[in-house]
Length: 87
Image (cartoon, rainbow, N blue to C red; front, side):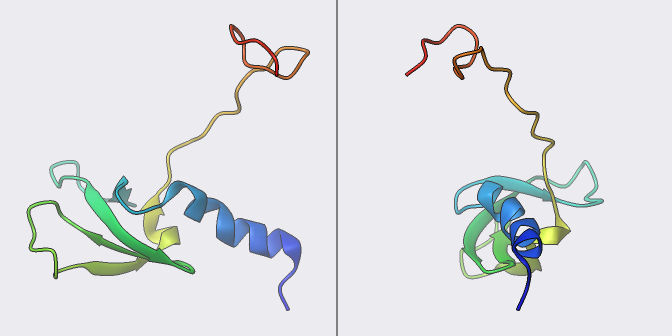
């Protein structure tokens, strides 16, 4: 049975990958347009180019997708982002 840390590593990329989101593959040439996520399940994502017919999709592992760097938001001492009132 996997440890919780391993499970988190598997789940975290999938938080960013969901149907309707544009993604890029790792080492994807710049002249190739972004892919569109059609479906996600477990560690797989079904993607396609927007100009492809809907029935043509690639099944890739989530680890093959280039994940954008997510920087943590700065918060005030009350826990709200700057410029917003705390709850």
